Length: 530
Image (cartoon, rainbow, N blue to C red; front, side, top):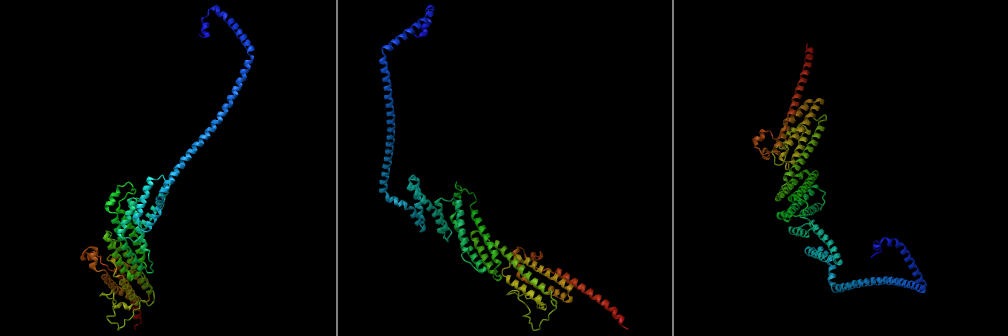
């Protein structure tokens, strides 16, 4: 029972006496303590000293224990380190023992990359690829070993060397069997997707084709063009044939569903694009070379190019229709330049004072010598009357020379263009005759010159056009009948309307002048008569 509970149980009288009682009890306790202290003073002193000694002893013991624990921990750490070092040394010892027993295998492993390189240099791609596959399997299984990792890295560089060697081989002359073998290696290496492999194949073969074109240098454009046509004829057929053999329809369909094919396109369009690029290069080269080729060899060049275009038809790419336009443009340009040159020379010669003075034809000129061949085997001959005016005869001879050079290669499609060129030359000649008629002191000679052009030169040129462009060949080329050709006026003919109008006008003006002269002279004569 606590003191509080005891207080609660006291009666009021005793509760009033409780403080007094407590004071007496306190004084009694103090008295007892004082008496105990005086009686046991020495004991208390010794007890205090013993407590202090015990405290000092335990404090030193505690310090020694802490120091011992620290030293014990360091010893424990050193022991753990020693144990760890021992275990590592034991592992290294085991590894060294294992390496000693397998040193020959490790030596062979280090020689793997050099062995692969020797195989690639000797062209043993199959063995090199098998060794690369072996190194890849070792890397997957033992990739945590430093030696294997190092060998794997070296083999990766050799893998790139093998890839470069295969691509380099594709840039060299190859048979179909070699080509199939090389592309098979590239597929097994799994470096390119099927779409990328097609691009790489065409790029490499294109490099080989370009190297064949640049192999020789020619000073003569004719020989250079023949060489280019021969290279294109052989190389492009081989490349397309190899492409179709390597990338068959089955491989194209099987590769179209692969997830690695990032490029999505219709596979045949790849070779079609390459063909378009190469043919464009060929046509550009042909256009530039034709500018420097001799005109007399133009038919030979055209024959070679057409044979090349026909040979491309074996792979479904007949390009003759593309080459025709190039030759048409070139021949038309040649004819235009040549006619412009000789017409300019004629017009210059007509500016001289004696240009319209007729020359007497020698009686010694026989009938056989009075005609000029248009081309070999032709019955068309130039009229002897042109010799009356040397400048006109020279002009006719030069036109004949142009037709002789171009007759073997000129296409039927240039019939009307040729007639238009001759019409323009004739128009320039008429303009010059008009000027000469106004200024010349001999208008009769100018009119005679123009009449000779109308009656002799123009019919002769019409016959030349008929010989160059026969009506039967022209109708066949246009796909119409001969009657329709004549009816539609598609035969090449010179237009003499301008010349006839000028001659008529010149004759009228001459007649007017004569009438005026006679009218003036008649009164004078009547006045002088008796």
